[in-house]
Image (cartoon, rainbow, N blue to C red):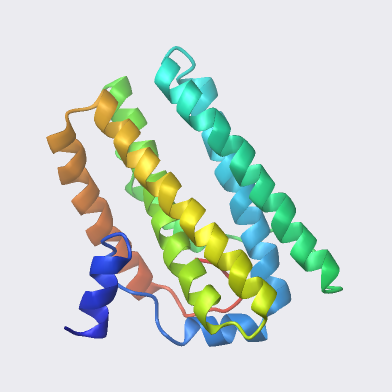
Length: 203
């Protein structure tokens, strides 16, 4: 079995694995990648808050996403702690070309439940890619504390990925959700091919 096929099977069915050069480049730009990671956690919390407010009449959405908000914000605080203890600077947010391209793939219109499904699947995909990247950092970073830190976060992000997809299947025909998920995975692979390998970004 090829390395690419093995990664596809183990890492949440992503169609294209991260370029193996990425982790090494990220380690050389630790301040930048930790800063970007902190903002990723902040945006993940904000995204869930937006869904809670937009679909506040759906109890399962509110009850499922509320703990994730707290967890993602906790991750933000933990990343900030890692930045501070290493004497690094928490910089300004950067343009996230990866998420911008995914957002452009969201289907406009349709029923309210279709809109919910689109947002949940986009969130699931971001979590899946983050999980894959965190696994690489947990393996390749020389900093033992950061290895453990990213291993813990890898497990958490995998749980969020599953939660988002399962939640979508509760409000939309699971068959339709699964079909649309495959479309998202194929599109995301094309996005990954188009992006420059940069060590100052999580995605």
